[in-house]
Image 1 (cartoon, rainbow over the protein chains, first blue to last red):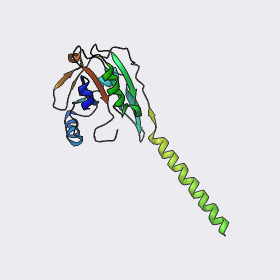
Image 2 (cartoon, rainbow over the protein chains, first blue to last red):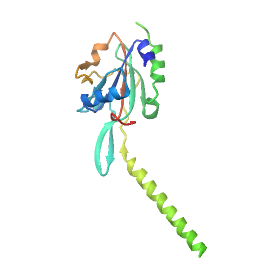
Image 3 (cartoon, chains in turn yellow, cyan):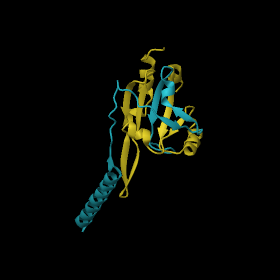
Image 4 (tube, one colour):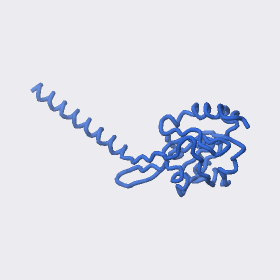
Length: 101
Length: 79
């Protein structure tokens, strides 16, 4: 994370949890970046990563784990889904290659 | 006698295996929505509340910072 901040990037975590739950989660895992609440799934729909889960015959929709890197012009530089999105090294690599100014 | 025992064990093992396979299938019954966004697209703007109940506008970072958005499944899980 320090590497990301050094490469002039801000990091946001996003899930459908409430701000209160996210705050407790942030304290528990000790993250220093903001965790955003998409409680009405608006952004998940905008970004097309709402995933349907069938749990005991009821359908629930949560986020698909995805990492986006957006440059200073607002252009998406990389999209990583599922397992590859767990490791932040690629996001760091993308950010360090972006122009500083 | 011994072979009957053996057959019973094989049958039980096969039954257990099929039950486990069924349970795994049930858990994986998900409809995956892949994002249609790709590198080179404009990132859709948004406003969301952070964990301090403060509004965050993605657009505020344009021209200032690179932004990494990490979408995760649910808090307090390994997701």
